[in-house]
Image (cartoon, rainbow, N blue to C red; front, side, top):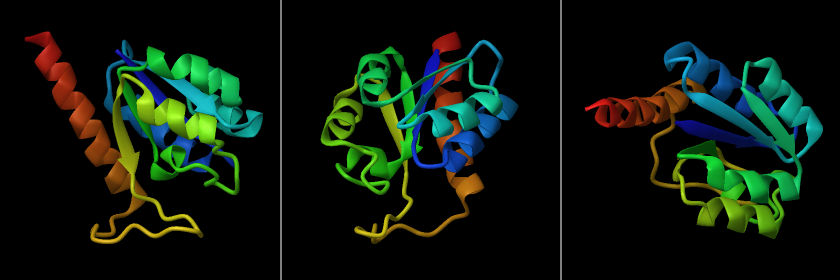
Length: 140
């Protein structure tokens, strides 16, 4: 199983996601760090992702390798993350074959309503539980 973690800007959220994935899932699960920039990718690699790539084309090419895509919701909204999410990145992620697990993190230019606020670690844990259930189902 391959999990793509997509993040931008400083890569802090992506690094937290990768760290929790590494702590909670078997080592056989491959984590692919896809950053909108090299800083984000580097931070996710330091958190122990297996492979990483940076930039729009790398994300567009690599995103379809993933069975699951775990990222802040902004990755499917063009021009979010201070413009780092290009329309092409947003479309590639939204159209990717993998199951998308998007964390409801507000951006300055949009707000997500109707969702109960939870700490980021709890949001990530909920996403990991979905993956864990898929892993259990695949083992049957």
